[in-house]
Amino acid sequence: MSTLNEEQTKKTSSLLQAIREELSKAVIGQPAVLDEVLIGLLAGAHILLEGAPGLGKTLLVKALAKTFSGEFSRIQFTPDLMPSDVIGHAMFDMSNNQFVTRRGPVFTNLLLADEINRAPAKTQSALLEAMQEYQVTLEGNAHRLPQPFMVLATQNPIEQEGTYPLPEAQLDRFLLKIRIDYPDAKDEVALTRSVTNRNTGADLVVDKVNTLVGAKHIESLQMATALVDIDERVLDYAVAIVRATRDHHGFSSGAGPRGSIALIRAARGAALLGGRSFVTPDDIKRVALPALRHRVTTSPEAEIEGFTADTLLVALLDSVPAPRV
Image (cartoon, rainbow, N blue to C red; front, side):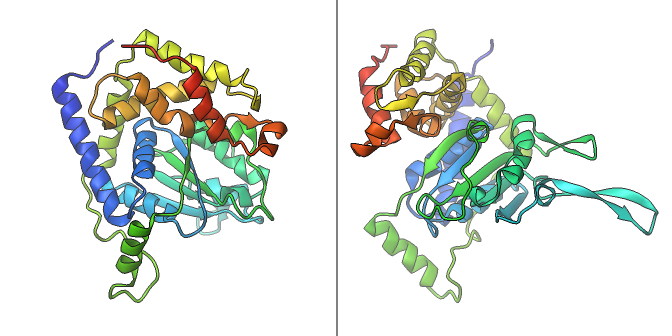
């Protein structure tokens, strides 16, 4: 199997850092979030963004789309949203006396599924085929989605009234679950200054974000990520972490094999973002929380004691010996 050479790695890493800098023009602070979103993009995967309202989730997706001139669509998930509102539908055209297919907002490069847990399971599942097969079926015909295609779904962890928990099958389709916390004091001051400085509105904009590459170039970056080398000992280490979640005393259920696959895919992206053509154990640790936090279930006893999936995963990582490579 071919691997990346030093020149390719350096060139790719330089481009990724440039994209990151463009994103930081719109999204103030949140450096870890920017890295994790780029890791998801490199892996060609879908991301679940969790955070309180007003933390820039929509802004982040719009800025990311602009960096590679990608098409961007946003769906506000509500209790009355129908599957046809997501994937599209067939309608009768009176002018030519035949049925025509009207494509839904899912036909895009970056799809922002805003507050995805506000729609019922039937509508949520409309995304399943798109997320897994990169196609949707309309009136019995399969329609391929544009490439690259990436779903970035958001949910509010605080307000749960009127929400529908995501089915386990759909949660498993998200490579990463990224948590967005409140900015620190310095970043919040900068954010407030940026929004209120000679602006009439109350939102940040992506006008300062420059387009660096085309959508086809993102596919090349994803192909390069797949070529990042991984030592067998590092792969065994990732699998050992996932298997340990199934026996850990704080979890009522652990991660399945998709957890191991997610760790490797995300770690390759982390390595490339870090300027390396090979995965290290630190890359595995770096992506373990976003890759596994939504694939494990905390036991009631652990929750009573104040443990969360993240705190339990941190303790688990300390207990699994990392290889020396």
